[in-house]
Image (cartoon, rainbow, N blue to C red):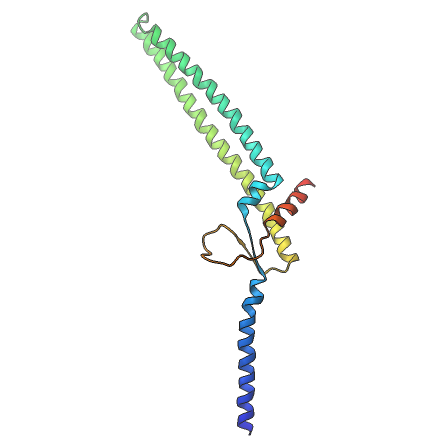
Length: 178
């Protein structure tokens, strides 16, 4: 009798354990959500402002580079026309001056590209840092165990869970207006 009681006790304990494991994934799935970070960055007010600022900077820099390019073309045409009337020493001097201006133009283009890249990275870092704080706040409010980035590759399959993207954009926009 004692033996059957112990066996029954163990069966009950095992059944509770199995049911606990079976119920846990359902409960855990309810505590997992995702956010589409690309959408947050592209659709949030702060993300749109950052993109507009960078696009404005790109436009100004492109205009500056275009003006310098036009100056070089004009200078090259002038140099080609003068080739017949210049002495060898004058040709070398003018060619050296032209080569220096081409080098300056190339340096301007590289500096511009680097400056735009740095500004873009700076804006992205700021927006992502702010968005992560918003995600953390929402996850704590909703008692989420895990929030995944929707488009990251490490997760090969997941059922669609709660999508926090719209809520993150709305909260982030409200916070960034302050």
